[in-house]
Image (cartoon, rainbow over all chains, first blue to last red; front, side, top):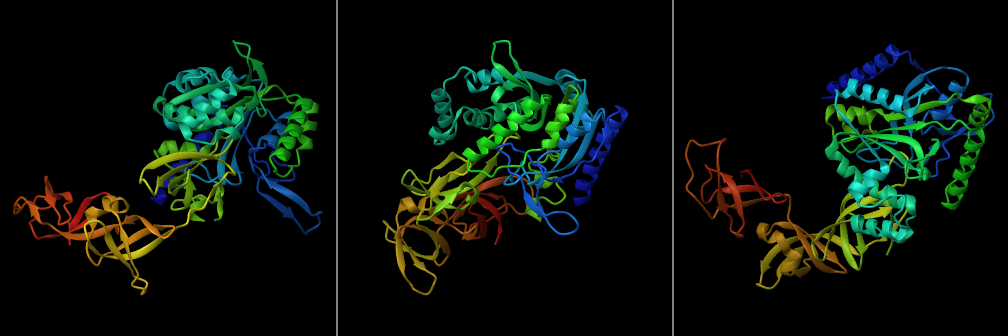
Length: 314
Length: 188
């Protein structure tokens, strides 16, 4: 049982490295422990203290994603790169979450989201076997499965639907929280029946580090897609933000929101902003939860079944 | 009473919901890669016995319910109440009504120890041990030679409960039953 677990993981890792090597994408390793962290108000970092030796004591963050360092490499002219490494998110533990997990992240300079989507599907086909992918916009998925338009529905209507599906005390939910709740309670269960789904054109508020463009109806949407397999959120891709000033503004907005939520401020990565100023090539990038992919490959119901030592086995 | 925040939620936690004491059955952390975290709770309303689901925003809290689980031995019934006695040496007796007893009436046996849930001191539910041994009072005659495989038939227990058993089981046999599923496990 343990051997089967280790063997399948090793096979999938080897196949992934083979996939990228054969496509000329360079494997890199960047720090998992660093003086700047993710400012995302909805992600909590593990924070620790560097002391002793010949360096000044300072606060360090375990990285929630390798994104900032990888973008710094891209700005230095690394060309296409990928990384397989541990990421850390505090307070996340469930059948689908573990505070430490293996992330596969890769970037394609000069590529748009359509090209990246094709490569993502090719990788998943190589690892899980070929299958067809159903593409749907966030808007259409909501209309079909939730029964409302996420861009035009009123906040009252969104809250009412949230109460109906989850009995939550909805008066505390803002628009984005309502949408997140409806995705997890209604959309994801519906997607379970559809095997592989590419969901794209997320509301602009959910852009994170993606560019924003208008959709066919004039709504501002994030240049972003997510891959769901059997209702499991597997990968998240962006047409990457390349504007240094916009990046700095989003860091500041994140920290302002953290303050409002009563969460500690996070040291933003000034060197990322500097790298963007110097010039990040137009690129698309994607992060894929590798442990979740192993879950799917093995037909497992939880991360614990595929991680060598999950938090349940510490 | 104390409050519990979502990060303290776990199976078995007793809390108040709309003035009813409830017990959490299943607690699920929900968090998209980018977005808000929620905690979805499947719970049993301890007054009505009904199971429901409710989602909480991360950081929300609930009020603890004054609910205590106590080991008690079943003594007898007077037709209206089922009387249990504490096993802590106090010999204190409490009568539970049919509503509190619920489905557990199928698995009642004198001198067996049950988990009696008290809310503000009064019994609101009775839980049977996971496995219980009861004799068969009525079933079709056993078929010799038909052992491990093939077929099943109904068998009635002294409590009136009916379970599916293998064909070789006879009246008077002692059966081990899983009270959570109501299924036959083995002969005892």
